[in-house]
Length: 169
Image (cartoon, rainbow, N blue to C red; front, side, top):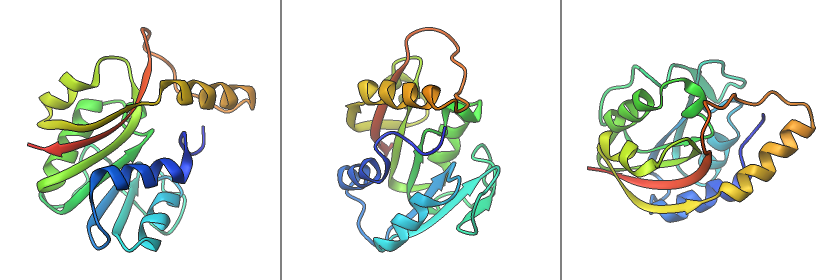
């Protein structure tokens, strides 16, 4: 699948809920072609993007499970539809926590096959805002299937999609 549910409107909503202001340093983990990095930069953020397979010059090649950046490098870490498909959500969350400055924010929109609260708490985050976007995700996912796009396999169980703004504890 390409992109993420809600597109740039979703990203703008995450920024508004996070309270991060222009000038803040934000890392987009799983940045793909860099559309979100470009948006963030156009809004005045010091944005960088990483992906295992970058599709633009705006995105650096790096693994979200071990980015190579020093700890406490960013005011915000943003990821949309990438943690689950990374294969290790716990490690992606741990690396996000390590990368954030004290008081930093995790801006996360992704599928979950369990309640997100306990998972985030184990990683050292507390949820500041939670928006259940499961209905929007279902429509997005079905449209991708209809177009014949490759979709991530399900580990089974109930799937939900959440937009989450979390603070580093």
